[in-house]
Image: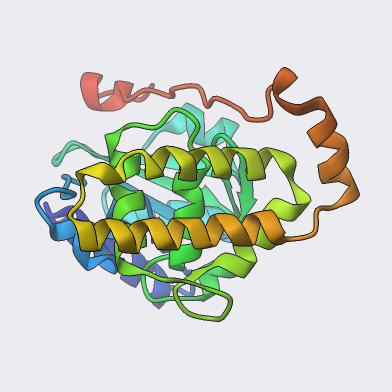
Length: 254
């Protein structure tokens, strides 16, 4: 039986997978809720009904077996068309969707998180989780809430703990598109901090500015410089098409 609580349901999936030699890790809102104490602050709290997980492409068939054994209903056509890249399942009783990304997280930009699945307990590391929010071009309040709690709860570092600013800066130094989207995201976040109390505002601003300074200081690759010449005249990101939730609305395989 699938637990009605989303975090419990996600944990059930991950524990079952682990027992079968398959490692899955949380991303999305539930991951921030698990890692960031500030996510329980009423100002940033949001309901997390759906589940987002990262797995390995090589485990695709095992993951499909695990999900169906646990009673999740596959989105059959989508899964066939995206085999090895992404899978979608539904918990019809609780009206819940489960998104499984395999090796790569692909939305406005593309990130390979395969190696990061080995780290952490139940979630991807906070650095990779932050990337998934910074890469969103058309943000909603939920992205801003997740970004805010991340910078409230984690410092920016050049080491193995907290937000790995060195890792983000290195990524941005090789890809002008990611650098540009991340920079715009951080700038827009700074416009939101006026709502915070003074101490909180100082903490968030200093950490955001520290990350931006690390991104700016990192030596840029030849490819980065060439793409920068074109600039924003050509779009540097993708806008993911909505894949809808027809199954939850209709109770049938879309």
